[in-house]
Image (cartoon, rainbow, N blue to C red; front, side, top):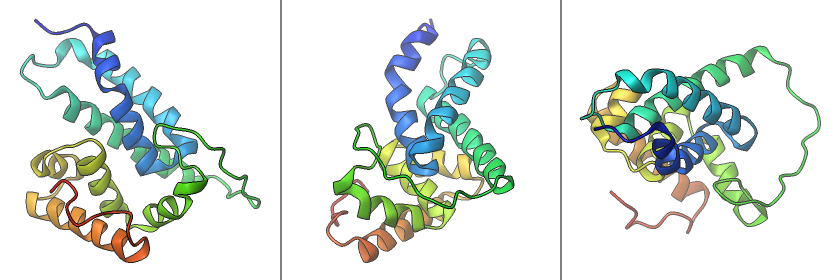
Length: 163
């Protein structure tokens, strides 16, 4: 028997929010998270009991993030930046500003692959399914993303990170 949807949100909500924050940044992540769980709530009754719920939610979050990124391209850019307020759960604070800047500069596929692998803990096969490529391409994007982070933010990512 499937667990109640409220339990799904409680169990996977924080991971989905962290993924949204890594892919989109702190300002758009909350909306994408909400949209993810609204869509998931509608589709949950039809989800097979054997499905990997976390991978399913990250897939929905990925699609919602793409929607946000597409919408952002149509919006005007702000001229003044407001400083980030220190906070937890994946929101960059003063100490993480350099790392956040390095993550933000990664190409989209690398940023997504790193988020899905190292924040959500998904397997490369699941990442490939979400990104629409091969397992090898997902592994390569993740490795290239980590390599770029090590290059632009030395010391933040150790060589022994979850492989």
